[in-house]
Image (cartoon, rainbow, N blue to C red; front, side, top):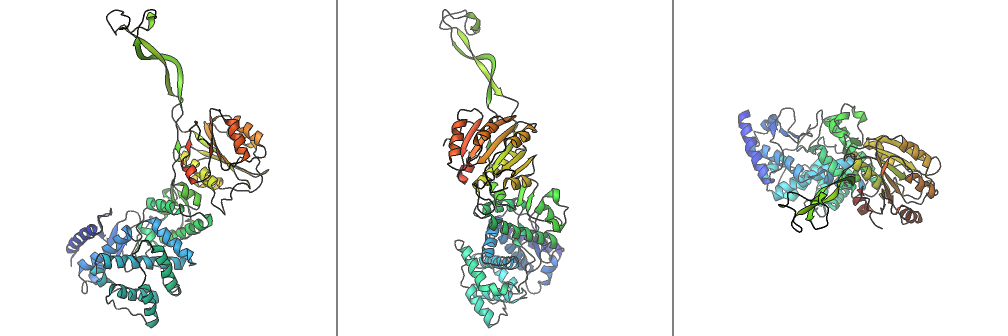
Length: 544
């Protein structure tokens, strides 16, 4: 079949697949001889098919059948299994929980996803073209033979499985699992892993990883969604380390995508750019690691950095100020005895009491010094009375990270001061480096609660721009009076926000001390709901 006829086949089968999959937002596929059979490029989700691969099968399978089968498989990976990067991460998390190493976790996840995709297409979509294509699929290892025999049992077809008696017994158990039941999906994956665990180490890691079919934005959203369900920083960091290694492997091999029968390239020169951001795309593969690039979360090394992406802090503009000048604001009837200087001479012919109008003057209002968002200075309590953010989920650290992001995302800079016992101090900023700022916010000493007023005064004194101050602490501070005096005496402060994380005696005293102070507001922060309700610049207070 010539290229022109192949293009006609591609166009017709693509419209058929789009209609069956409810018109996914993917670009029109194309033919390319640079891929073994088909691929989804990482950067633009472009599906490519190799015309040579189609021609090799032409004597056994019609081109329309093979093209339709490959397109259906690739699109189903994108729209349904896994469908989102958050779903893929949850599957990876489940595999790691079963005690698998990184190699076995990837193998189990990819084989499970292919079982879901192919079973969905054959059983739900009645895609017989896929059955024809799979009958020519190579069976390179025991797991391939087991899966092929599982397909035969699930679909009641013959695919030429070469499984032996023991492998057929394993396939019989796999065929009993509900692969398309979304409610029990993770439990099904655990059962799948339990059954095939002994065969994973001898199976090769698929050259095509489902990680590669997602855009940078989808990666960011997926990590944030999974972070919302994990409360142990260690578990999250282990998961992110695994994802970073998988992304690094994709970039190194220049292969990614959700392939059907062979190696799928996908990532060419864009791998490092999507992992690290365009500013770091020239780094070598050894330097690829977890981090945040170009202001967008791709692979967050910290649970708090990822979880903070779910929140958006409102920062109010400066309040209206009242000017000293008066201007005509409204009318009122003129009466006998009123002065003539405020009479509106154009309101009537002549001066008629009760009819003629006179002006009522009011003071003008406007914004002072424009509406630029000020910088922020974060004062974090890293003492032993606060939860350790490395071992337990810390709401105070999340609060500081969310507040920091609120200012950074609006172009402002942030500074961080973490205090604990004598000499246990971290001072950093002003800076717009989100990675470093988040790292400093997570600093923890575990010592006593001592506030160094001198250090803070020196740091704030070096800041040139107007700055908001946010204090996150349980307020159980040994030198409480010095702390209060230090906050009140800070130069160049715009607004002070006090976030108390405990119903402590220090918090109550601090709330009473600052009651009535115009530029100071107090708020209790006990959980994530309190974090989501933070409004920086709301000087009316939050109540108890």
